[in-house]
Length: 289
Image (cartoon, rainbow, N blue to C red; front, side, top):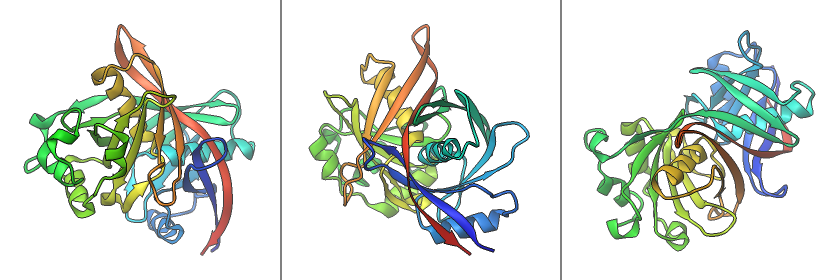
């Protein structure tokens, strides 16, 4: 049976760049094995599958070419942008049912924003056996002098290893050892590494994302990682804003510069949740059997 897969670039900046995700709008009859097979055939970092939900606007399931994951930021933004264009969602708010609960979605014109949870931090004392800050840095070709703070793990729904390098030049020159990054990510229950440098301009930080444990050597935009990073920047790096712009993908080959907006929800100086989002653009459609 043929299935149409929409290729949608999420977190575009001025209509350009962004991270492509596959979106299948009619997934009610597909098995888990079908979805994994289609994701492998599409070959993108993630493909989203939309089906009916009894508890939310839609049910969303996310597959990389190698496995299912709980959440995917850019595929969520891609999906709700496409649903809005097809008239399948309307109004200022919707929601998605995922394998670990329901999350709110805000719709604002051409932009969609997904809800994430309050941050949870794990520092080196809480790392898994065999994992250390030094091992994380070595897996990127870095030394302790190259970072502004020790690596940590932050989650707002998915976990990510955050590494704060001292400059954009260091970020561009990283030498990732993908097998080692995959091993560390697996041990920590993390999607991958989100490596970043802070900036003084429009963007609070510029980033690179490595997730070989999920079959993704490098990704152009990762909304589920931008949320934890925004929390880190406010909680631990002195950022004073509640809305932060994150740049990603600028150092890929070819460059795929992406723009992710994170809006933090604060109560008495603490982050209680957030919405991360941006714009998406339909690039093409493909048919898979």
